[in-house]
Amino acid sequence: MLTQLFSDIGSIWAKYGTVYLTGIGNTLILATVATLIGCVIGFFCGILQTIPYGPGDAWIKKALLKLLRAVIRIYVEVFRGTPMILQAVFIYYGMPYFFGVSFKDIWTVSILVVSINTGAYMAESVRGGIMSIDAGQFEGARAIGMNHFQTMLYIVLPQTLRNIMPQIGNNYIINVKDTSVMFIIGFQDFFAVHKMVSGAVFKYFPSAFLEMGGYLFLTLLASFLLRKLEKKLAGESNYELVNTDQLVMTAGTYQFSGSAPYEEKNKDYQGEKP
Amino acid sequence: MSEAILEIRHLSKTFGTHAVLKDVDFTVNKGDVTSIIGASGSGKSTLLRCVNLLETLTTGEILFHGDSVTGGKINQSAYRARVGMVFQSFNLFNNLTVLDNCVIGQRKVNKAPKNEARDRALYYLNKVGMLPYINARPAQISGGQKQRVAIARALAMEPEVLLFDEPTSALDPEMVGEVLDVMKSLAAEKMTMLVVTHEMSFARDVSTQVVYMADGVIVEEGPPGQVLTNPQDARTREFLKRFLGQSN
Ligand SMILES: Nc1ncnc2c1ncn2[C@@H]1O[C@H](COP(=O)(O)OP(=O)(O)OP(=O)(O)O)[C@@H](O)[C@H]1O
Ligand SMILES: [Mg+2]
Image (cartoon, rainbow over all chains, first blue to last red; front, side):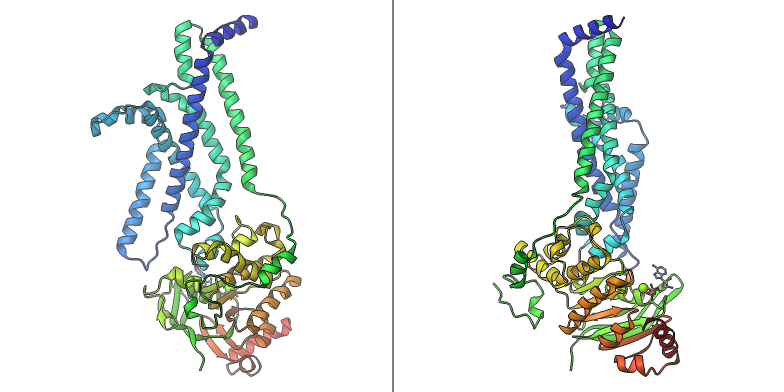
């Protein structure tokens, strides 16, 4: 029986191998691009959601920030709370009704749908990641004069990224599998190839077997690569003590060639301005 | 006549209904090393956090070189860049190396050129004796070393005043000395400092001014010889009696 199965798989592969490979390629491109864009959306929402406001701020600022938070909240709840397959249908067939335009390119709409969907999940992951960063990191940054965006960009988000790597990986693996629902609007991914081929040769199981193996291979590979990336982001576990003689030379004869913006006030300042 | 850098005027701070600071009023002159002492919960940290605008004042104002920093006339980030702060818990940036901790603020806030920022960072790291560790991350160095890097980070911004909130309280006893030594050398160079401390020897030997706080008000202030050896107020005497009994 098994020999029958493998010979069926062999004959399907001989005929449709390149089609399957194209499907795999499309699945990987869609999942990768959409996860990356989804991350950007998530981090963007994270920055915007955490803009601080206090009792001392003007009411208009407070009102705008509250509105912004509400909009992000609604976005997250709607796209997390409905099936992606329906979102695809909704956006693909809804656009002509609302805007009188339809998508010419199936890639654009597919990337759009999966990115927006991933962004909704990532926004929550990033929010959680930001909340888990010690308040001292924010205060340290504010104390040297960084504003909210600088604090986020240089201090908080790099740490958040490291902390939520496992969740980003999770989302990526989910996307590798779940982009299969995009067949509903005609996207030619790995799963769509199965529907096409099995319909043509009437061999459902051998093709499904191939698909199962293919998806598992992809996700295992992704999982492996993500671990490597995680390790890399964690940074070196060792550091080298620097031979100070050389550094003292430069640091000891320290003289400014430029001037900080406040130096005109510093009367003791002896250096020359450029 | 020395020049006033910071003037705290009628500062009050309440959290909900809890009045933590009540009408606090004092001045920091250029070159002053002011020690703030007082019992736990008396509002010392809150006072420093208000001065650095990490807390919003309930009432009152803070003047920097005579200009109000709370009225919206001075850019608050620019003000913070000129008033350095060293925290009890160090608050070094965990994602950056020791060197980058001292470079990032200069680059992004002061917009200093790359080489200049690096040179200045190296200069101050050398000053606090942390030059060999420039490639280490905060998680890889000891508490005393972290605090010295935190001081170098603050100094690299070349602030006009440095605020310290119990910089040695989170340290093991054998590391307290190395941080105090750095602070003493800064005092010797006439760096203007405002230091919340439980180190009575620092308050007595290094500072030029001592402020004693209790229950959110300044009870007594003056030169250390006066406040610490000849306190006028009964509460100050009581506090010092309890304190000097254990820490000297
Ligand atoms: N964010 C806050 N919300 C509410 N109450 C606060 C807050 N921060 C401080 N307090 C209260 O303010 C009072 C003074 O606190 P603060 O930290 O300024 O004291 P401290 O003098 O620094 O004490 P310690 O010597 O223990 O550090 C305390 O009663 C504290 O509970
Ligand atoms: Mg305190």
